[in-house]
Length: 208
Image (cartoon, rainbow, N blue to C red; front, side, top):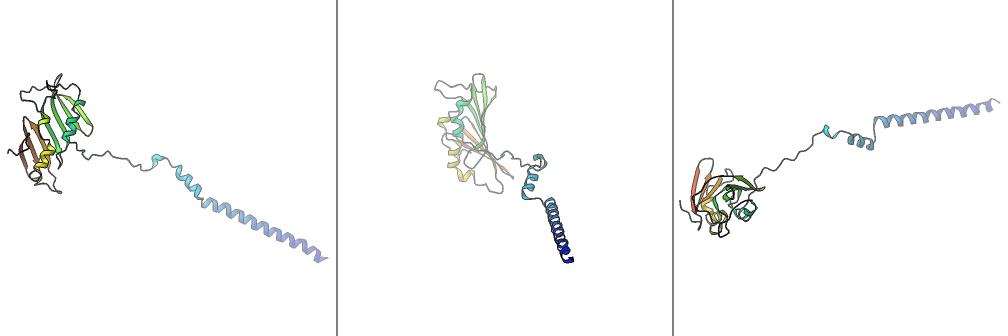
């Protein structure tokens, strides 16, 4: 009879031990999931961070010069409103200047002083195209016929060794060219000195 009573007690003990194990396992699962979040939870936390709370890369505009050729500027002169033409349908240009020339005679900026319906006008041609500026100056010099002169690109190609003789990667000179009448004036400024050369605009020959 004692043996029969011992069996239920043993069963109850086994059940209690099993229940305790289940409770312990369940507790561990809850504890671990709280302390060590899953990858999905981590990703959600990351995506919930406000965008203004971190460093946002800002792209800076490109400040490097964009060189344009003399030929391109001339071919787009008709984009300047109000320019007058002579009886031969040529634009009446009195002065041309190229600023910051590269080694091929292309400039970061071209300036054309030309006759317009309102007097004279200064056209600026750069990376953005043409910009017109009122320029009321009276000229008595003969206008420049762009179709009868050599372009700065051709001039640089003809006298390349002379123009680029003092150029170096360590100290790149600043070049500026002006055209008035039939004479190109090229000014080359380096860290140590400034040199001026004059060329015949029709032939490209060195004058001085």
